[in-house]
Structures are given as C-alpha cells and as structure tokens.
Amino acid sequence: QLVAGGTEGAYSLAEAHYRTATNMTDRMAALAALVHANAPVAQALLGDFRTLYTADPLVLDKWLSLSAQVPDEATLDRVKAILADPSFPRNNPNRLRSLVGSFANANPVQFARPDGSGFRFVTEFVADVDKRNPQVAARVLTAFRIWRNYEPTRRAEAESALKSLAESGSLSRNTADILGRTLAG
Image (cartoon, rainbow, N blue to C red; front, side, top):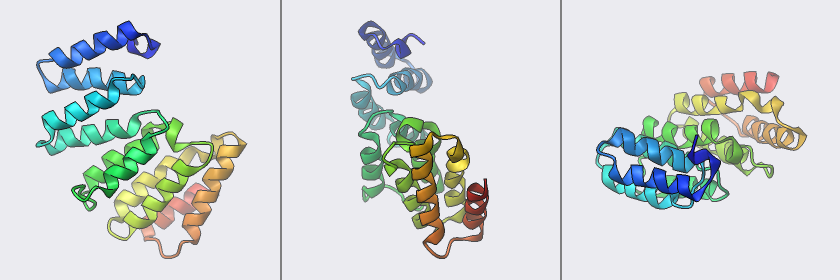
C-alpha cells in the first residue's frame, strides 16, 4: 500500500527491504511492490533478482511473471525480447505461461493498449505456440474472456485480433474451442 502511493520515500523503504531481505520471499515481495508501482528502480532490481536466482527454474518463473507485469510502455518490447532471446526455453510450458500468461492476465494496462498491439501480440503468440503446445495456447487465450467489457476502441481492437486468429487457419481443437466461445460471448 505504501509503495503504491508513489512517493520517493516509499520507494526507498521498499528498495532497502529488497536489499536487506534474508530470504527470497521477502525480497520478492519488495520487488513486486516496486514493479507494480512502476518505481524508477524496478528495472534495475529485476535484473539483480534474475542474477541472484537464475539457477532456480521456479524462481525464474517468478521473475518472468514480474517482468511481464510492469505497467509501462516498454513492457511489451521487453516481453518480446525475452521470448526472442536464444536462451529462452520456447518449448517449456511453465516459462511460456509465466511470461506471456502473466502479461495477458496480470498486466491489463499493457495487454489492453488502445492501439491493440498487446492484443495482437498475444493472439500471434497463441497461433505460434498452438502448433507446439495447444494447452498453453488455449490457456493464454482465456485472457480475452472479458474483451466485450472494454470501452469501444479497445473492444474493437480485441475483436479484430481474435477474428484475425480465427482466420489464421488450423488451430488445435483446444484453442479453437476457447476462441469460438470467446467470440460467441
């Protein structure tokens, strides 16, 4: 709550908590507060967290999830860059869900960008991943379940992205089912 207020003093307290934490859970809590508040120090601490815990795949999932939840304009490009990194395990369902699932489900500011780029990114991701892992694709696609609740500009962008996915060709049964139900409303 304190960090969400956006004051420099609150950011300093959270950063101090991050740096003096004696366990990963406390460090993660401080980092999450700073990330969700889009604090200036958040990106540097995300990098530090990844360096500290890079060897633990479950903690890497937490890092991926937090990285995708930053509510700033650069997040979509960062998510794309992480996906494009040759070291990123593009066939690991947990890593994919942590990154793109978190972007779509836990970052409404960037997922529902007025220009539709967040929607298009997710539907393009779904089309690609559906070929390798239909369960992950279908699960990520459920982020669109509320698309009809957006204001008209965003609603039109979401519908356009969904219809483009529908027209893309052969989707798995899982993904086609979720897509059909999502479009049917």
